[in-house]
Amino acid sequence: MFHQFFLCFVAESFGQNYPEEADGTLDCISMALTCTFNRWGTLLAVGCNDGRIVIWDFLTRGIAKIISAHIHPVCSLCWSRDGHKLVSASTDNIVSQWDVLSGDCDQRFRFPSPILKVQYHPRDQNKVLVCPMKSAPVMLTLSDSKHVVLPVDDDSDLNVVASFDRRGEYIYTGNAKGKILVLKTDSQDLVASFRVTTGTSNTTAIKSIEFARKGSCFLINTADRIIRVYDGREILTCGRDGEPEPMQKLQDLVNRTPWKKCCFSGDGEYIVAGSARQHALYIWEKSIGNLVKILHGTRGELLLDVAWHPVRPIIASISSGVVSIWAQNQVENWSAFAPDFKELDENVEYEERESEFDIEDEDKSEPEQTGADAAEDEEVDVTSVDPIAAFCSSDEELEDSKALLYLPIAPEVEDPEENPYGPPPDAVQTSLMDEGASSEKKRQSSADGSQPPKKKPKTTNIELQGVPNDEVHPLLGVKGDGKSKKKQAGRPKGSKGKEKDSPFKPKLYKGDRGLPLEGSAKGKVQAELSQPLTALSGLLRGLALYSP
Image 1: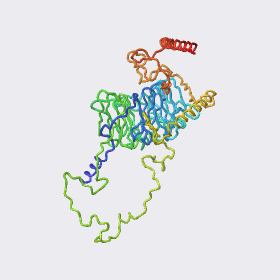
Image 2 (image 1 turned 45 degrees about the vertical axis):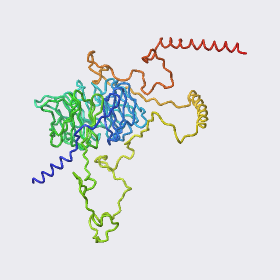
Image 3 (image 1 turned 30 degrees about the horizontal axis):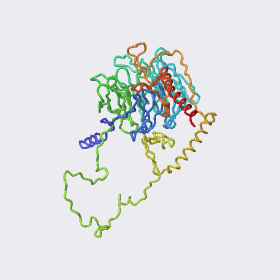
Image 4 (image 1 turned 135 degrees about the vertical axis):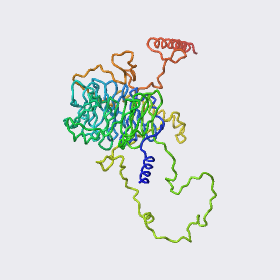
């Protein structure tokens, strides 16, 4: 009995599936606010303070693409199931869908109030769940730009959060009075409901609802600083006004820490919660409910978002505008590659066997091939590809063949050297003359309008009854308080984000500080520059008249 327990303990201690230490950072140059992995964990999308969406190739830890998405800060992101689309929300109440490969915007929706969360349907990327402030959740249908307002328990309490379940069959909503409603996604019919109460039967506000990628469990983060884990099957069995008991109650009993963001691990066996007071991540084992690890970031920083890798024991957290990566401590174990490998503390004199380096051992007798030796002679199939179990759902046998796992990256060469295999200088001059003529023709054709302009995305206004339109997103500050309200982030209004100053367009500067001139000062300098040119041209004309 003792030996069995010891073996189990050793297996658990060496096979732990949660991160243990910091493993570097991802600097997006802009201030990062929110992040999310795609379904396979190969790409990480980061929403930034200047409205950009930075897509990282997570295997190489390099930037694969930057989409100039919004003018205002990006507050929520979600990948489609096949990875080809991204839906984003910004603090100026805009929800947009993006094509990841081209970086183009497919559709836009303008809401009357700020958006707290956007989420694709897990199996149907034509549907998007949107949670606006002071409003009931809205389900968008992208194909016809229509929307459906989900029913709520109390019309006077519109502080509602919502989430699809793992397969998108049901939508779970929770309000500030602790009431959870389970709605059928297709018909919006009420299937089940219950109320989250504290020990004294008082209700507590629902802050977020998160589902595990595997299994039927989900967690509820509430204002009483307790994370409750439920089984979705039990919720549906209890029906309306049920009284299900949570599987686990997770909390920090010592510091009474409030939680900013909570989520499950990729296999659903662990739960991570980010503190709302500091950059600290608490990791619990779901089955037992014990705290297994606390990861501490830089002191004095506030946590903004947390995301667990879908397949590997890696966590990405955001604080002070930088994405921090947490992973396991990788220890080199050479015996995993060669079982007879031995590590030596000091040099050992090796005695060579007489037949060690012979091509054929003449003295060796031929043993009968049994077991593993006989299996070596069998043909091994190296052409067919088996589906990776971690990438397939429990109701799927094959992987998605159209999935977008990686993005092509073009190398950026700042100072390219001369091409040693290029044409000779004479050929370059003639080609430049030909290019000048062809570019002139292109300019004429573009002036005639023969070149098709870039398609402008369709913008749909979503009208919601009784929703205040003067709300301010929590990222930007508190409404009505001029002192505490932060300076509005993002690019200035009117700037497209993609336009850059042409290197061929001359700029006018004043003094030695390199400050660009504007308005009347620019016109004055241009006039002063034109005066010497006029005098010079008059002098040249005079010389031409007196020349013999």
